[in-house]
Amino acid sequence: MIDLALSYPQLFSFKIVLRQPMEKLPPDSPANPPPPQRRFIQVCQYRSCQRFDSDAVLTALKQYASPDLMVAASACLGQCGSGPTVRVVPDNVWYCRVRPNDADEICAQHIEQGKPVQRLLHPRFHPDYNRLMQRLASLGETV
Image 1 (cartoon, rainbow, N blue to C red):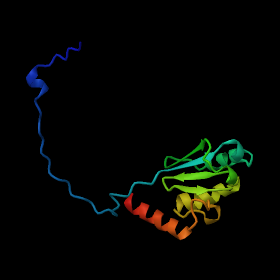
Image 2: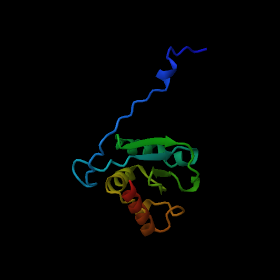
Image 3: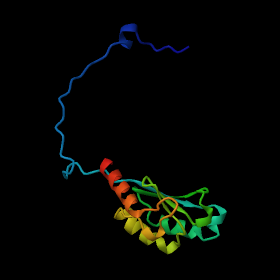
Image 4: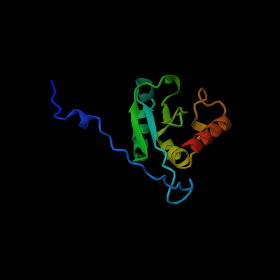
């Protein structure tokens, strides 16, 4: 049994504080910059991807890790025939047959500029590049 050592009136007394509404800043003002979009890169480390040097891809991408970009190994991503597979979240962009030297391009073009690397896109997930760019643009507007 727990003894709270509070009387009945103390348990149900509330203090109501009325506040004036704060003035909203314009969304593009320097005092109110948009929050940076945090991304997470998963690199498949299952046997079939490891056969094609996915550990080197993971090492190359980890060089770009920052507070806004997390890079980690993942279990099988289910795309064994087209590995090494890399997935960028929250964009939900899938890359296939990634090589260690592709890490520079993925980070420079996709992570920094917001434009996925078209030649590495997994065709099963991204058959239409223009549609992907429209979806990513709409995600950027809601963030």
